[in-house]
Length: 419
Image (cartoon, rainbow, N blue to C red; front, side, top):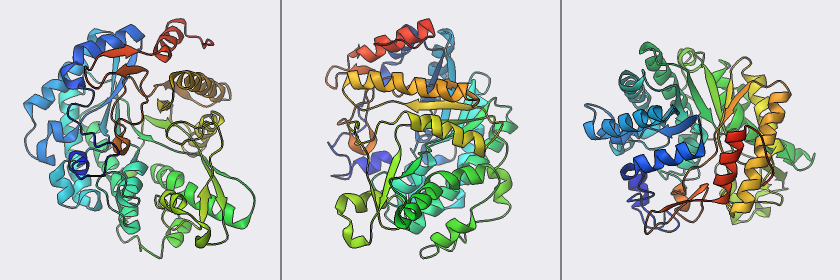
């Protein structure tokens, strides 16, 4: 689906395609050696569904399966725990053409695929995630249209969010049936902070929080879709896709939950839509039915335009702990597209935020930095770089940045040190 999206001129900011990207497929052993050099004890990667099951159904690809087998074995040989994510937004084209995440069939096919992966790798993978950031797949892909498949339809975005969560439930059942260990899901919950106490600001903030955070947490907790959200979205959907018996699958107990944290959403209401500029409207497109409002990040910000707010990570870990009590939490992504000194400080300050949450009683078990390598940042192409290791796009040479050397020392010492 992303290859199809990237082939449309203008979809990817700099026209970058995934060939060769950072060429990890052909440089696997060298990249695994980089992980050994860093000293990490776990590595989170995703399995590409179309790579291992072209078309999204039918036989598996021996070439694709062999790559992931070598990846997993290479990690284990280096004493690194494999942590696998089953879906990081790359839907097989054939399934997208048949309706994608707007159909129940895709959720069922995703469950089948999960079962095949558990059969093949369940004895070697330490931890499984079904989905990565379903909010992004649903709302950037089907409402704002800036991610694949590039749809701009509010009703589709809410349906996609729901069917993604149903896919999570189907996959979880298959993982369990094949005795896979430590099964969970990864969300990108973002604290929504009201800039002021005006009624318009509070209404917009509450709706953004409901779509971005509460929708997913409520489904996982077995609470279903709230009456408030159904009412707020009634102008474009009647939620006819909901089925009572789905909730049992979606809310089946998970062993852990991951949080990908980068920033917060700071909201300021406005009097009417006429007060909004093109940037405001683009931001709100990802939040259908939100009352007129602006996103107003404060300095400092990253190259992505995202506010740097470490306290938000502490806050969101508490949010998860309160919504899903008793479920262990992992910070599964955290990092910054920024000059390396800023990236290093970002990682340090956010690790402090994780430790603060832990000290305050949140059961947070571990932390993964994003990302190992400079790579394609989706619709931003190669214009934004999150890696702690630089990748020369011409030679593919890997060069650890100062942030990588600092992170290596933090891991070795198990202590946060100043740069």
